[in-house]
Length: 149
Image (cartoon, rainbow, N blue to C red):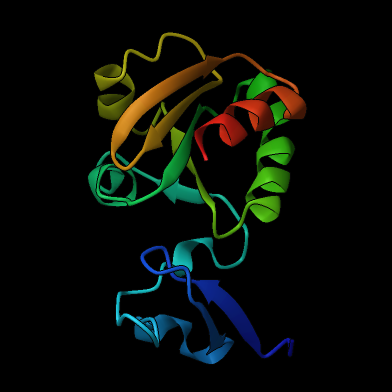
């Protein structure tokens, strides 16, 4: 595959779509079913979300989402960050990993009773299905993700 294009898997019909990198901002659609393609997961990186974007990015999302509730001053949160980045790359196209800074977005943290960080909220098709608390090893987080796929 060329470095100039990416393969994006459609979350509706699972078709693989080759999209030139310079066209990602053009809101690409699936060639088979014409559904909008999710370019937020395209680079295999966690997506930053806010109280304002939470509903669109998480609750309206068809599929599995892990929301990392964190803060910049939190040591264990900084330990988990590279693990989540690795999981975002490994499961790109299958799991959306989102990061919510609880200091800047207290509404969502309060809504889901986040009392300590890091807390990882797992959503499937807009419904909260699990909560993980603490700086868990990669294998433990991955086990929870695989159980929900």
